[in-house]
Amino acid sequence: MKAHEILTHSRRQFKQTTDSNHNLPIAPNLLNFDFTARAPDKVWVGDIAYVWTAEGWPCLAAVIDLFSRQLVGFAFGERMGAQLVDSGLRMACFRRRPAPGLIFPSDRGSQYASDRRTHP
Image (cartoon, rainbow, N blue to C red; front, side):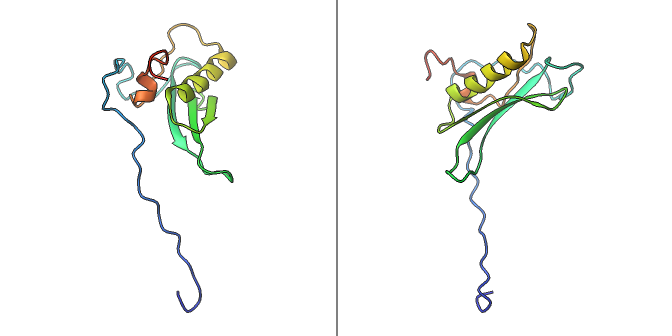
């Protein structure tokens, strides 16, 4: 490889981004690992990820409808915080206007359990 000037791309080390070790209130698990939905806008799921762009590694908070598997809301930001999750969820609610009773499970990380009024 050295003789032919072939370079390798080394893998990045895994970085844990979910902080489940917190004292914030946790909602009960209503899905019990049943990730099927019988109709649109009954069950949404969310997660946060880093996404490579030409400008670096911004965070993406995504909200997906389990019935259609469509992205219904999202937000990009510099920090992986409760405000990012809140922005993505607000977009989804504004676009879809779900009826009361929507279930939105998450990985129970601090960003999803936070009360933004006390944990910005």
